Length: 584
Image 1 (spheres, rainbow, N blue to C red):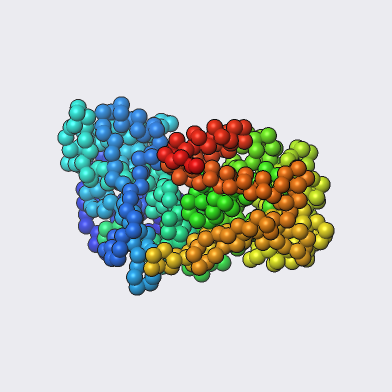
Image 2 (image 1 turned 30 degrees about the vertical axis):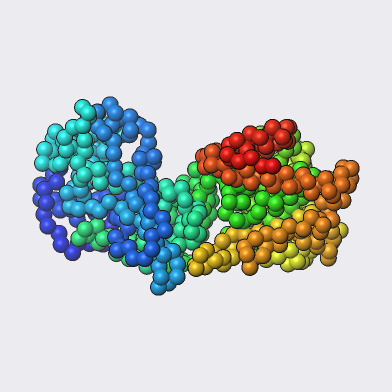
């Protein structure tokens, strides 16, 4: 997509000499070069802001991890040190607005850096026109330094390797960010602490959901006119291009005729978008929900206060008894996260079949069949709905059927399945247990009242204001767990106390659990002792840095859950050693 002339304007267009082909005009301006660039390659950046307020977090985002391995290998072959500056993140507290702010600082670009950047783009285009499959960026840099000696490409040597100048490093930063990423959005996608990215349109700050600070505005505002030095480029064009690229990667289409779309990106991230001003007055918009390579575990939920070790032990024991459960709450409350973390506690000999619109659940469970819906496409290609998959799943002989979210006719089939003895788990949009049951029993779901108690537990999750020191921040909390005796008889076993931000567990109220353990020939006292031991075990795991800080923590959690199932005493001793604690 070439940029129309009216999409790039200059406040001051001096004539400069650029590295050009022999037949090109040496008086070419930077403006003309920028006009020739694809929108996705325009080197716009976040606006520099003077940080004011208390800094709560300060870290870098590693851009080199995003570069393809072929680029790194080309630098090694050419004997060049591969190094680019990293974007810097600061989380500051805005005293005036009473919110945290995410401040991203990218390396500043000046005229020399821009010239090197444009020269690299030209050389890469010429290189690819030869039919090359991979970009040999190391050789391109060496050739560029030989042909255009006035360009400051290299700045000496270190340990026998060529060292890049600061100008070249910054040019490479924007090259890697734009060629292999998504322009100015790339650093947000690379930040492992960001869960959601929300771009609402022009003249509005990009918001992110941060694992440590929740929703925050950033210093990135896509304006109608974005600056590259003295040059003005269209923010509309950049935003439209981002939406088109993301939706295309999700194998969906979006246009003026069909201006809304959603889907899943190749890496598992979820995208929902609108195009131009057909339905969103501020211009194109999109939200990306990032897919965590290492999903949030029950240990993470314990450490962040979403639930207590005692509550986690209760849910672990309940899933061992194959009690069905439903996680309820509003959008963004954390329903799927809580459901997935509980499912990672399932015994290895149980078979799980999960059914989702877009795959979000990630389990460290070998005996797991993951199914996802598919829209109709092409001639004769049938749509595969959640209902189709749910009917199919019953033929897989599952112990637990998981439906990512119930909202239509699939709810009826799920309740029918769990009423015949299958375990079940799902999420549902509702504020509390009573409203959830009312919705289930009325149009359009129409679940018979006799089937309601088949969903044994209803777990309510909310995002609530919680005091952290003298500041009020939003935090996710399981605020209640109800056991369902009948459609009009709920027994609250867990409640959250806002006064001290603590969970209160009442085993005596657990009538459904009690009936199930009595069927197994156990007493409530035996269950209480086992829950205390499991709570202590989970607390040990949650305090072990080698587990919770591992990139594969969910797999380690599963490993120790299996160990506890087989030999609990040995498993406890091993964790005591890891945590450096002895529990008496």
